Length: 131
Image 1 (cartoon, rainbow, N blue to C red):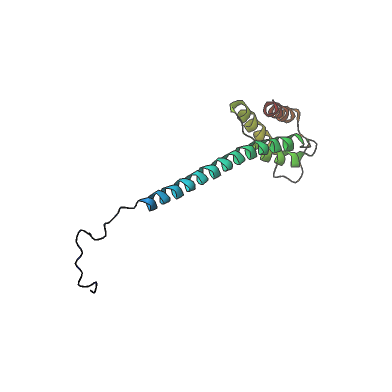
Image 2 (image 1 turned 90 degrees about the vertical axis):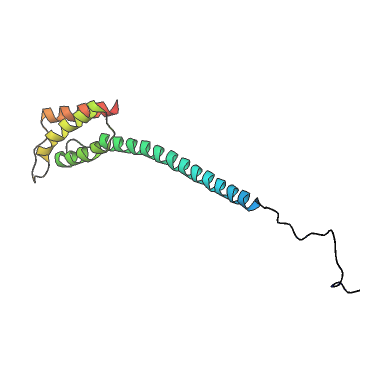
């Protein structure tokens, strides 16, 4: 008897089974990407903060190494490196006062040595940022 003539009873067709495992897979992938992004952000943030602290130390060391006897070069260096240091209000005021006095020593061919008032402003600024 050929199978085409055979009548099967009590056997049903294929049933559709909901399979959500692909969504679980996508969820695990998304969670992994999120965790990697958070880890990368944390590493970047840590590196950026430690680098900023190191840069402040570099600026401070460069300010301390300025030769006050070389008037024109030191006026430029104090203005440049002093502007990069993170300052609070008294330090900012001292920096602005110092820069106002240093303007007379920049942009000229021949400059005289620092006068006593300028030397005091420079030492006051360096004391404030060092302490």
